[in-house]
Image (tube, rainbow, N blue to C red; front, side):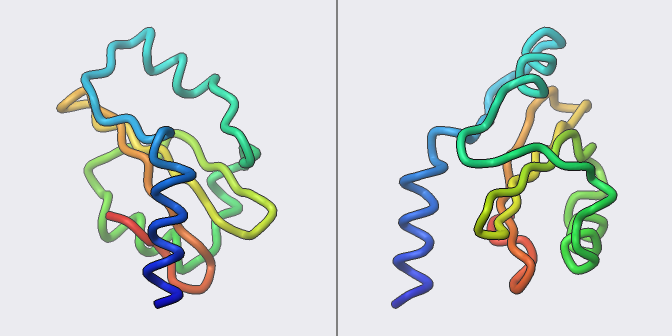
Length: 101
């Protein structure tokens, strides 16, 4: 039940931050420069090992463009797929790794 509540809370809070439409070059720059409320940008090299492994396994065709972390230890990963000109936002935490694929 807690997992279900957490999922709904994440969707309610972060649902507006997802981007899944066609993205032009100027839009890519806007995405990378956008300040994400509640999260602060961090270096991709500082991601926990289990999240790095999940990224390599599940998102090998996409480029990890930005990584953000909040005070609760949750991560927001922004991927860009150059082939389809789209971006995807994925959430993760240190205990469970990637939460949405």
